[in-house]
Length: 265
Image 1 (cartoon, rainbow, N blue to C red):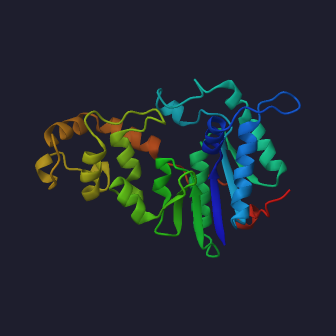
Image 2: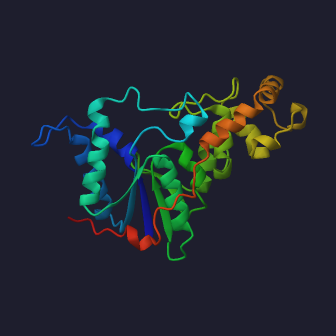
Image 3: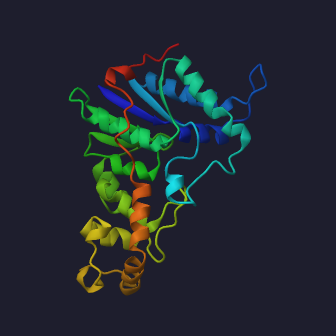
């Protein structure tokens, strides 16, 4: 069987900005919700049989206590924010498994669901439906893959290396150095995608990077400055890595058969 785990938060945002407004009989804005439901039904028409959808029931999570600049619901349009609980209700009524996250984030639920499904020998493949780069850390070979449904692009482990220059296990370290504007942490000054990928491709993790740049053995512009910044901000880098590391220990289901959906009603 193939398991699809879907980023409901991303899907709701995507459809909110792609579709014209539409109200139901009670005057509620529902266009994005209807768009997401139609999109999930499209998965079933394409052959998906086991589907779970993760949502951010509230935008904040435990990470906001770790870093004051972490993303919040501030600035989200009220008409979009109001559709989160409506989306969850609609999906449940349609018989789709939904994981509404409060203490954790939807991304954590996706990571935990993918890890749980990966442990089941009956599962042939797990497809994580989101373009979010932090989910790249969950990719495993060609068994657990990431799918950007908008561009219809699949990323297996080789695809992640081609895209970021590092493997999935190094993605949290990579994001710690370069930052993640979508999640609200800046990375370390001077460290960009190229320098981080070059150094981490050799050392994999921040704590393994030698303090002396002459020991790096790779050509990186301004290596001395980068090494000095890392030395000075190493504790901050480790905090950012913690922020970027998704939780896979959240109990979401006991058996993947719970995710079976026939595409009705």
